[in-house]
Image 1 (tube, one colour):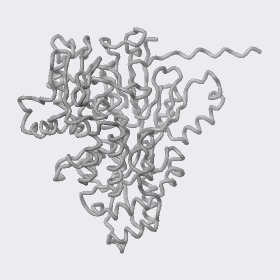
Image 2 (image 1 turned 180 degrees about the vertical axis):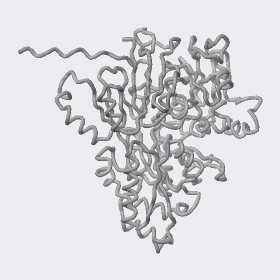
Image 3 (image 1 turned 60 degrees about the vertical axis):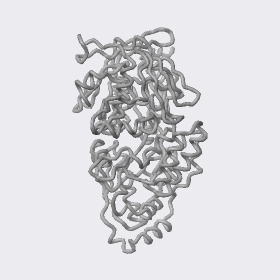
Image 4 (image 1 turned 90 degrees about the vertical axis):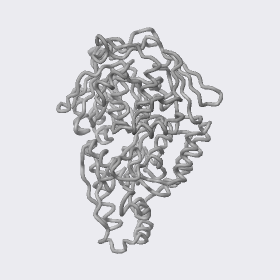
Length: 547
């Protein structure tokens, strides 16, 4: 079934298409359609599958990875290439892309989450790159021949292949980076960037006619002619567009809206020929308030803990979210979606007004009138974020007698304020880039945090530092088995929660509405979507009942 346009609705706009810069969920999704890495995820079970690399070997030490590239993989046609024809991907492109990810620049926000502390010599290369790219390059990445590249890690890693499947590890052409810089949008993926109209809220991708993959039956991919990402200001707007037939997929709908939709169209849901499918799945995602630890009052852990005890998370879930949550955030930051990682062993914070007031008193704020004015920064998020901030504001006044203001900004402004420690508190959320607790805990790894506030800190925007946490986190990263890594990660997570650099709110789940004509776009806990195999099937007409 070839042809047609797949339209997906989002509440936020795509902020960047430069792989080393992507940091929001929408940008990651779009990037994954334009670019590819050596490997990619299987949408159904998130296992690793071949992509630009058709096969690989790992030596007995678990530190030397040898990748064999698939022949006939071409970068998308563009004026940056001779004759505007995309050239074939070579092993040198892999080395160039990973060295770019290990190079200091204002655009590179993903080094610490990906190759730092993984590839041998990456940290030293990164530090040296501030004075110009080292002439010898990153020696632990060796180009054996045009189709073979070898990567040496500093220690075994249970998550390295997951990192290679994430958007920042996409393979990019040197010619494109040199011509376009951070405005690059040329990869090897199934779709080509066409246009982004921020005023209209549409980003359009077109079918890549030279895409290298076929499906299991030998059909050339992709099937759809175009992919449209439509951003809407509110969830209500998204739902209205879905009901009008303007979009095919809506993510993250409030349960209240879903309940209304089902009640209004209950007969269609009972029908075998319903025009759409409603799915509810737990996610590897969480919501939290991030404290700025670089200045008072949140440089005092007693204040942070007092506020953590003062919040009734169940009330937020019941009265604000209307049940739209997997559960209250009373453990750590890692959500309960990992079967083998028991978060109930991690002691977090539950509602305890007496403990909140005792800690607040001990912190020196006996007279609550002297507590400094603080503000929560948040992005719109379809009005849900504002409702959550209002409830937090109300509860802190009721329990601790302190006033907290909040300010709504664009997503880009909020991220910028976070990186430069301008905000007192930030209402934040994290959706896993890959299925491993490491991806949540790296938000608190202190080694890369700059010593001064004039330099951005990312992803550790709270600027949390604890040598004990860092040591356990590093051991977890370098563990030889998943069970061993999970043990160290859980210990590190407990250390972090004891220090309370964040106030956990809730663990997420997702309601997804999808037209029944959309095939081969399964849901998964990290919202990883590869639209290359999606096809659209027209729903057959329902025959009239015989009288």
